Length: 620
Image (cartoon, rainbow, N blue to C red; front, side, top):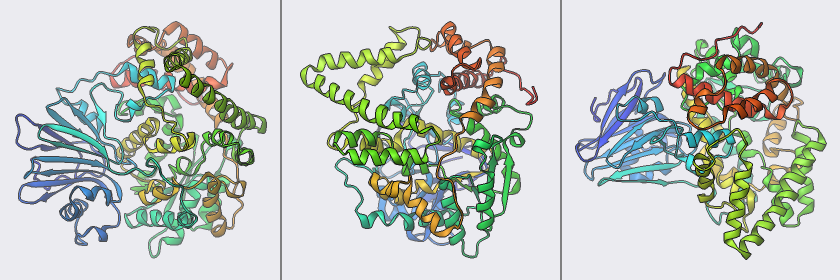
């Protein structure tokens, strides 16, 4: 179809523009794009506006009540021009074509809930919500990036991964960014930054807006058609459930969708059921074994990998996607989740190093005590992690590096390179002079994030919404939810809430020695239940479920053949590392083993390799 068509609701979409040959971009529908597709509306005599996703605060955008979201986008664009992007609230990708200036604009929502991928070769631009739609184009190579895979397996993501993907020549439009293509020149800029340079901590009166802003975020989801909520036993989802119950008005209560883990150490079913009953929420509570059925974690990872834009990050993603699929037949289409609560309300361990650097020993001790009250790990392990690893050792290294940088920048750079090279495990990048050097060079080229006097914690905050693992998780979650016919709604990533909560001082977030204090206070005032203060320890369940199935899959696959062919791993050395975990020796290697196995499965599944592990019965 042409770009001016208004019949674009079904399926995925592809925008293409050869700037040398075509006077305007074209927009094509592609089958298999999920339950909800984009809507296109005319803009002026021959322009158009596409909106894929959903908008909040519709009445404030200047459209008519009966307008679809693309019509609201047109009204906002005619009123504010490109500045409309900064005024939109919701989850979306927007595309606007202005024929008068032959300008194409593509924008993504503030938190990046809806993905957007692109390819630009200096002449032709391709844009799509789905990575596979781009990869299906005949002139787009399906070359996997060995460097991106090496960074992933090393858990050493570089800033290049903010825009890069696991495929060479295919990029991601980051959250809160806008792409402009005009006169053959393409530019990508950020239109919103919640933690700009020189920012100020939220004033007390601003911090007190946390509850009204979270209530507004939940209310926006309800008004946009939210019908269900992923209810765990944690305070993040319980807080959303509490506000949704209080603010639903005449709407039916949200349907709670919950998962029960078999091990008593992490079984939250009693809390989940009590919350749902207290709030009058109908509930679907399913056990992990029931959701997986005859499948293992490896089975589900295999199924997801075939259509995943990247290797499956976590085994828990596989389980929750299965839960999504079981909820869809109930007619649930818009699911509210507590994703993001840890990201925006948790205080990162870098705060301990900043307290020590400022000689705020009382603040460091309060921080340590707060972690001890909420972390599932033993007290001594928490003390070592917070006081020694994150604070004392980090502060000493920081001072030593600063002193070395002042004396000799060249020696400092050499020391940093040597440290990065030593950190690469023996089984990764056997070609140390080629791929290994590129791995280190990309991190040496990255700008140093620490910017005194703001400190490491602020630097961490600043990178929060553009952290590559976070972006990959959003890409995957959206793709799998779309396949299940469900849209995800994430109130903790509401832009107006983020504007305040990311500037809230750690002492406010830990008031009274309790993690996520403002949220806990909100729940305690409205829900007469005694909620656990510690996070659940899912490590035991992970090892129990993954170790036997992973070992069988690894044996049947014959190791990491695809990763080795790409030069990413040394098979002999890697087999040793995997054996140390699968034989029950070193639990700390569990997530590394998952990343390796998941990446190998993903490579084989995406290439149609028949040498994949066969599905296993749970009883085996």
